[in-house]
Amino acid sequence: MIFLKFIIVCCFMLSLAACGEKEQENISNEETDTKAESPVVVETSSEVPELWDFHDVIYQIWHEAWPEKNTEMLTDLIPEIEAGFTKLKEAPLPGILRDKHEAWINGIEDMEKIIKTYKENAAAGQKEALLKTAEDLHTQFEMLVRLIRPVMKEIDQFHQELYMLYHYYMPEFNVQKIKDSTAELLLRMEPIEKAKLPARLTDKQSVFDQAKTDLKKSLNQLQQTVADEADKDQVNKAIETVHDKYQTLVEIFE
Image 1 (spheres, rainbow, N blue to C red):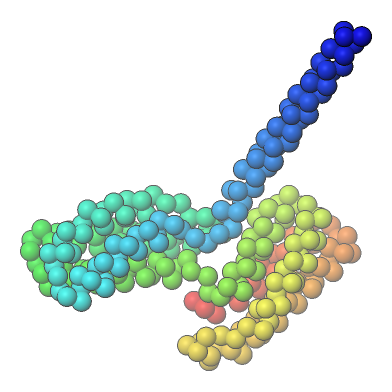
Image 2: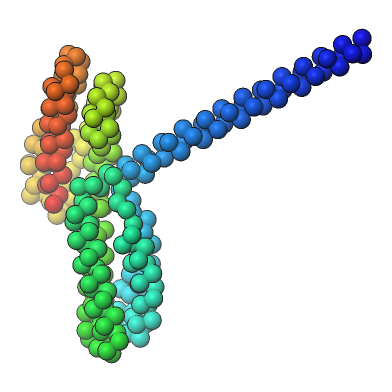
């Protein structure tokens, strides 16, 4: 009888161990899935953290040293400028900003030249030239910010989904994901349809309205094309049209 109880206890302990291993396996799978998804999440974000980190020294230049014409402080900030720019120069752009890549590289190269001149002016004690170069550095930083900053939050959210459709689901020709993505884009189109341009662009409101209409029409056509079970070429052509209409919309802000 004691032996039988011993056997039962052993079986129970083995069962618990097996459950524990299974649970650990599920946790590991979940962690793997999360890690597999994270690159896509990063890829659809338009953030470049190194640019915002670099803002710390730009702030000191523009809001502290420059207004006071404190060229000594501007000189002392050189190591911080160099350290921040080194990280910024090496920072990769997320995939969603791939169309900005050439302009970004050009902007980084221009900033590198400005920093070189900044250091030369500081070393030569050219105070007025250093102040001017500090102003140029701030202007160049703002240019990079404008380059990657979403034109409107509604358009940015739309673009995040369009990016997945255009660069993932279309090449894979994953029909179900194309259907789901098109439906999601139509939902994300609604706040864009209600959006008004900022005051500085009010003269382009009629062009903006037409671009919105054309984009919505292309989405409806894509949804119908997929629903009709059209072949791959037809679906891809419809997606290309949506992408083209989106580009036309964004060009209004450039």
